[in-house]
Amino acid sequence: MASPMIRRAAVLSVVLAASTLTACSGGKSGEEKAVSAGDLVSSLPAAKGGVGRVTWNLTGGEPDTLDPANAVTTQSGQVVRNLCDSLLTTDAKFNLKPNLATYDQVSPTRLDLTIRSGAEFWDGTAVTAQDAAYSLRRAADPSKITSYLFANVASVKATAADKVTVTFKQPDEMFTSELANLAVLKKAFAEKAGDKLGTPEGGLMCSGPFKLDGWTSGDSITMSRNDAYWNKDRRPFAKTVKFTFITDATALAQALNAGEVDGAYELSASSVPVLQKSKKGRLTFGPSPQSMNIYVARPDGVMADGDLRAALQRMIDREALAKVIYHGAATPMYTMTAPASWPNDQRPVYEKAYKTFQTSRSYDMAAAKKLVKGSSYKGQEIVLAIAAGDDAQSRTAQLLQQQGREAGLKIRIQSMQPLVYSQAGYDASKRQGVDLYLSSNFSSVPDPLETIGFLYLPQQVYNYVGYDDPQVTKLFTEARSTFDGARRAVTIVDMQKLYEEANTVIPLVSTNTTTFLNSRLTGAVTSFAYWSMPQMAYVGATGK
Image 1 (cartoon, rainbow, N blue to C red):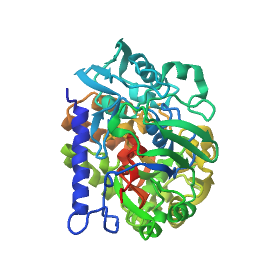
Image 2 (cartoon, rainbow, N blue to C red):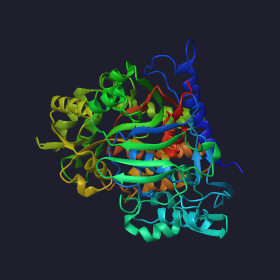
Image 3 (tube, rainbow, N blue to C red):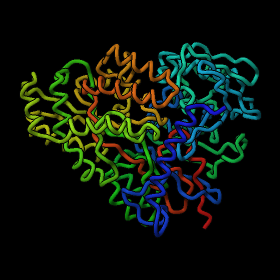
Image 4 (cartoon, helix red, strand yellow):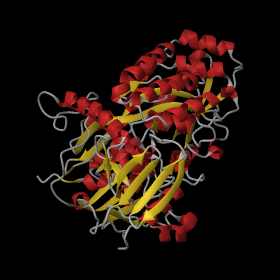
């Protein structure tokens, strides 16, 4: 039974595919010609043969956990998707597909999942409905970041040896597509590992195409091919994959150009000019619902002033930011949700609303100065946190500092070591003394509600300022319960008018997925869909 989520994902894939075809039309294909910011490529030509080892860098640095229920960063999620099967998956163009399970949306309040016969964990034991139900209930625990996705779930039960039934308190249009990001663990192993699950000491027991071999803190994570993997069509080409943790953009570009590292996702914009000219591999830009934003980091302090937050919206020259710092691999953005997350059928509704923010938040230094003057600001230092070693973030912060100075603001840039910076994204104790937090954002499925809920519902982990508007919560609940895309779009736009007025998130640019792959390899998924799939299983030899 086809669900509305399948249709929504497929709709976005049409938009992304159209962008790719447009970029690649005429002359050589997008994979063959020199890459420019206009080229959007979802994947490279399929691999032709096996390889011994692939060395891949996690640009965001070492993961803080491989616990699937908390693996929500680009680096942690990327590793986990190779090790642990999700119940559903996506392809390179964001189409939702069965994976460890098939599904039947029996009614708006009942979902049946049938576990695939023959699927086994790395230790050779069968994946059961009990394991799947346990994993979902574990992900729903309030201590887990993924728990927000279960807000409307009434129960998760293994109703047969191979069947899990999810019942809902009210319809939930989001849930099924999010199953592409909810992994299945072996229940007995996870219970024994306890709090050490997903750590270098505790490890994992999953059923994915790769097996976890080792995690050396501060150095690397290694995994090897699961030769008994149930999905014969997705058995990896690489015997082993080594994930490295280089966060310095210059050092990473040098390692890629030297062939010491075979590839990486989410490369810093500062690396683009160098890697575009590389003779060692190819750089691609892929469709992505990602963005770079400034987040008000806490409910108190200098940024509690609404006029001051509004001033930030007007003092930033987003056009210059996209052109000068991102080298055209990004576009100016004026709302918290990236335009790439809009479903195509309702795009005109979202676009009309978006234009009002584009106008009201356009670069206007005079307006910014006026807002600062009318605020409670008295020259206090405003601390802006960024990731150490990220040149694009550093340059972005310097531009913000310069424009802030012109508007009458004193901004101090605070560089955080990558692991601490990553933890600060969800741990308030790591943001002590920080007023603004420069960070990327993304939706793992093509649905604006995912990021809206994380940021604007009460007590959510990314709701840094404690935002709580009963009307926003009401409209969110209505939208989430609505399977009709047209009605949902109208509700989301109404909600957007309210939460955007608070200016707790200052959007900067929407960014493409920037990928580099060594010339000896091909097959890489180059759209942001890589994050919801075992992306390293696709990488193999060119066959030349």
